[in-house]
Image (cartoon, one colour):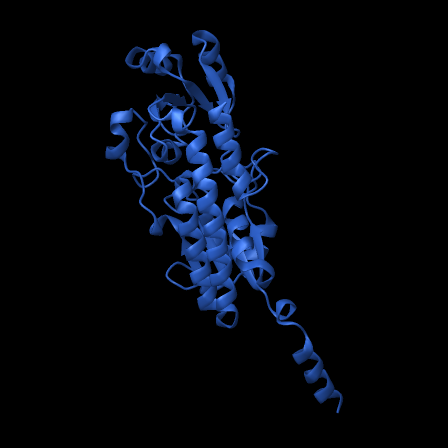
Amino acid sequence: MKFLLSIMFILLIPAAIQARVQIVVTYPYMADIAKIVGADRVDVTSIASGRSHPHYVNVNAAAAHALKKADLLVVNGAGLEEAWIEGLMKSSARPSIQPGTDGYLDLSEIVTLLREDETAMQRTPQFTHQGVNPHHHLDPANIPVFADAIAARLRKLDDANASVYLANARAFNEQWKGKMKHWDSLLLDKKGATVVQRHALFDYYLRHYDILCAGSLEPAPGVSPTLQHANRILSETPPDRITFIIRDVFNTATAATHLGSRTGIKVIVLPHDVGSLPEAADIFSLFDEIARRLAE
């Protein structure tokens, strides 16, 4: 009798608290999208924080523990995690989240990536990540693609709530389309402007808004900026043709600040991920803040 009562009690527990899909993502932007799409049907853990250097994330025991119970692992891909993800994956014995399974989603495989030859004319340093730029999430047009992909994967893993994931993704994408129109209007007069970056981080964003990049202050990805390289950029693109110097939050400010003081070019600090700056609290405010700072 007690056994039957226990079974009846379990059946009466709301589905939302019976078994949520456990999602682990590598970066916060994915976590925010997954939370919106999955709502109360999922639990989401991000390995990196918004303040992490995306190429060199400090992995702790909590991340390994989360992977061991994950139903879905979402990665940025394109080599961005290559310096730290391999060891973490080996520590997870869960075969259902390995590459090639429904529990593994590589976002770089579902969007068009910028390759070396496509950026050569902009004098962007050669990429070390499989010959591509891995920062594809900063193209606002890719965000709805990611939402749809996460929803589709959740529908495979949790068919009982498939309609919920589909509806949430559709609602998110409609709201995102409205925001993109707003950002388009904010940045309309920046079309054709030229910028210099501290790191080759915003190439996808700049391409989307037809903003030109005169180069990165890094002679090669991950290599500290040099005066000689900065002078080379200025010799090819005079300072009076450069509108902004873009600085990220995870590299030192020295090179960008020095070039700005030498030339009088305005230096703008831009967030690159959810939580990278206080104003970038979620996926919407991340792109709000990027557009706002560029439009000023």
